[in-house]
Length: 433
Image (tube, one colour):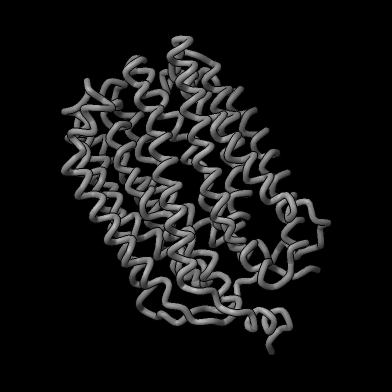
């Protein structure tokens, strides 16, 4: 029997395809500008030591390693469905409860860092304990930001999603530049730039979504919510794990002077995703709402084709012009960085395509792929340190391993995408008790 909410949802008009190109184009522009501004931080590597720069790269990856993608996609999915089915008050209660839970978890994490402060500083070769304090604050903002940007994504407020990304990047580079150039700062100063940039992005997202999360709350079934969001957290968590953890693994095996090459190559190669991630970001809430309305759409085919073209052309462009760009940003580290670029850029292509397929599968609640994604992530986590122990002097082993497992992830996502392309049922937010 069809519920009243589903009947109302299916009666809503479908969105025009032109809006997809406009919205994804804007997000692409915003990501490129924001990414270029954020890249400005890395010009400061010429003003600090190689060791300090490698510390900055490692601490920055700590914030990137957090489950920001799963959190954002969970609230994007819940918001998109709530906007269709009129369950905004349930969503407001979820947002406030999640915010409280994040702060509570962060307090526990801060306590553990305080207890093991000496071990962490020794393992990461930190010279200033303030770096840990700044990183902890950045971690808190990094955990809260995807919650509210997920709301913007779910309600398809892509205009302000883009502005939040760009203005956050402005704050990041300006603060870091002032502290490094004006006060001879190092990794800690550069992390303070990342902290203030995150604060700017979070403030914009909270302000734009305040009409939703300030609504009076309404009861929702927490158990049903867990069954819906659990696969989203695990599936998108694997994508983010494959995207962020290689730097931290490498840091444990290679000294600071070598890690500078790795961080530099990663900075350029991850820029490929500035081009392609907006396509999946715009696609996801539209597919959630199409599923809630029981509407068919060919949007996925358009996005996967566009992602493949952009990612491959971007990688080829990086291989061709990368050496010249590296000379500008890292004039003293050209050879080491350029040697890693082909491997790093190549690893990003299958990961970008896997991300689009995962967005499609999880937006339609086709969760059978999730256990296989988790197995791949666990296998990668186990295999990489074993291979690094076997080949301790070969930094490219990290990227070769990453490429292999990204290809495996792509194969699994493709199998579940094309084996049975029929969409799944409604993925609306849970009802009240």
